[in-house]
Image: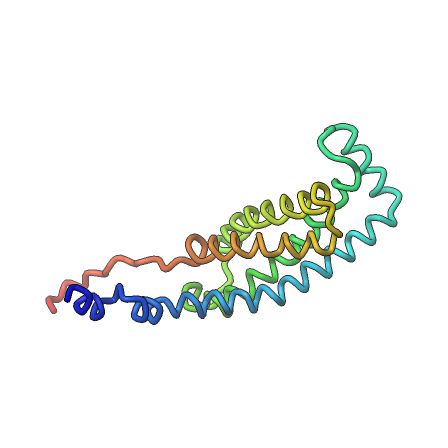
Length: 183
């Protein structure tokens, strides 16, 4: 008999699923925007990597960074630089699309420098997860770079959606304004 009252509460899974459908829809929209953004990121990464690998100046710079920091070989430094370049372009496009579509209600569809900087800061965590996964998959697991980048995208999706939903675009409750009139 204790089961019957539980069926009528919002804790029962069909009701909970209905209550959280807005979050699921938001995650799906974030994923759709992410697909577009990933295409931008991935394309820019491949173009940057190709351009940097053909530049004697860039290769010399990667070698000097590698020698001075003793933290990575020149190939790894090149991967990180190409990833930074593609991230810079992609994060700006992601902010614009997510402010306009995914988190339109929270942002009012307005682009603000403060919100952009918060989005950028939260995406640095996503970039860190992306880059760490990329380097680990490519240099330790010895996966092809294109596979390593694809795995890295999944890692950054989890971090970026969580930060966007719970930090950057969270619903902020405004205090009620006292108009001096009794209701």
